[in-house]
Every structure is written in C-alpha cells, then in structure tokens.
Length: 178
Image (cartoon, rainbow, N blue to C red):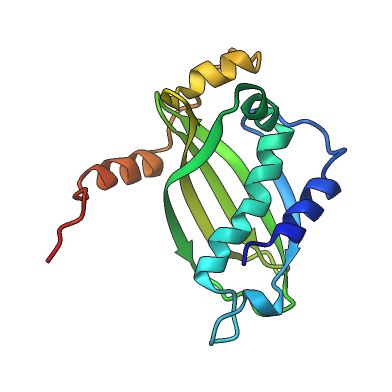
C-alpha cells in the first residue's frame, strides 16, 4: 500500500522549508515502520523505492517543479532506477534521506537519493532517470527550467551516471521472450 499519510506528513512538515535551487539537496528524516519490513526483518527493497518518493516529491515542490507541473498539467514519471544496497535498515530505525537533482540531458533528469543511518553509514543509494511528460510526450528539462525562470546550464554529468546511461542503452528493449 502506498504511504499516503507519510507523504502528506512530509509535505506538511516541509511546507515552510526554504525554497531550494534546482540542484539543491532536500534532507528528510524517516523511520522504518513494521509494514516496511520483509521476511528478514529489514527494510524491503521494493519499499525502499516507494519510500524514496517521500524525498523526491518534497524536493520537487521546494525547487518549484510541482507548481509548474500543476500549471501545465504535466506529469512526472520515473524512466529507470539503479539501486545499491549496502546496510540493513531494521524496524523502527531512523534514517536520514538525501535527495537531489544531479544533472539533466535533452530528455531526462537524473536524481540521486540516499538513506543514511545514525552512525553515518550509507544504507543504500539510488540513481533515478525521470521525465516530465505532457500531452505531446516528454518535455525537455531545459524547457521546464526556462518556464521556472531558471537559465542555468546542466551541471557536468558525472562519469558514473554517463556509464549507467551507456550501459542501459545496451539492454534489449523490449526484453526477449523465451
């Protein structure tokens, strides 16, 4: 089940947070609740992806993107993700989530999110490919930024992001059916 109440709480909690620059980092605090765990009594890998919404949506709102999406009746979709899991998150454990836009190209925005334990260890790290969608298809990030009053060039794409993009182009689509 989608954590609607938790999303509303995050939006309420950060309603008066300072606006962020487009590449600013949104930091939020969360708990791993009993319904987030799997059979091994730790944060479920699929639930991790859902919980990352709790950081991305407030990030988009603080950066001014949510208002633009509403104004233009655009959507925001995920077009890919790569996650690295390194430390277990147990029930009732508090984590800090960090969410930021790393860079963009002609079609997609690339976001980085991570969950950090109290001892300073990174539990997991995700790289997302996201697209703004409208009636005509994908909206170029540069067009959206222009409408937001931003005239910045995309930051240099980190090599590890470019490597992921290149590797993903090698993946067959549609997948082979046996």
